[in-house]
Length: 263
Image (cartoon, rainbow, N blue to C red; front, top):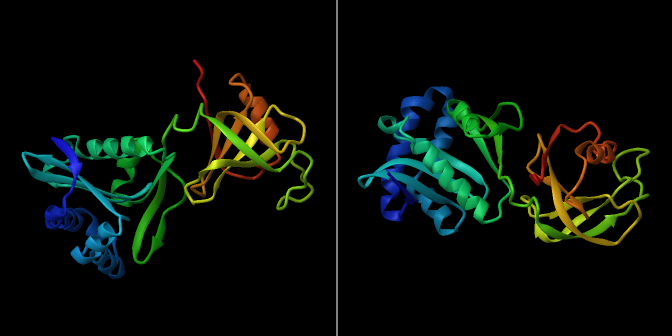
């Protein structure tokens, strides 16, 4: 088995595989609107347009030159994931995901997201994806929003933070709340939503304008793709102390922390 980019000349093979798996396993979970929208999304003309615009990329698993699985993605979002029935349970899906995740990590992507169909939700969970919300029905298609954290892409990196909310500044959205840590953005890194990457500064308790330090933690939110980084002047830190510093600023938010491991 090999994993490689699906060439345009193999696009019809990919479409036929996707249709075959969809009609055998997923068809019954869609209403008519969803079925129509799905078929439209995988038409040859639609896929060619997205590939030519460099929005969509397709990779596949091949056994003796036979296409056995397809994964389609747009930047950090998986949009297609199908494995031929005869090859399911033989590591095709795992190989596709591993190939894509490694490529994403190499590009500096910090989080991969997918709107998983109910059929493959458990498969994504098996490989480390977690739900970021409840099942949603949209355009006749029911899906579960999920995400995968690409560890150690940002953690441990040395960055520059431009402070636009220094200690003592009143919070613009939280009533009666002041910033008890400096807050700003990484000067040369864009987040997933194309905004500057936001960051808290830990262990500096006076107002500052900018700061150079190491990323010791990343805050991930259940209801959105964006993250906030935690930057410090030392890689030695107490997790409880950091979380206590940020408690008021992140009150009422469903989140999880990812930490730099210095062991």
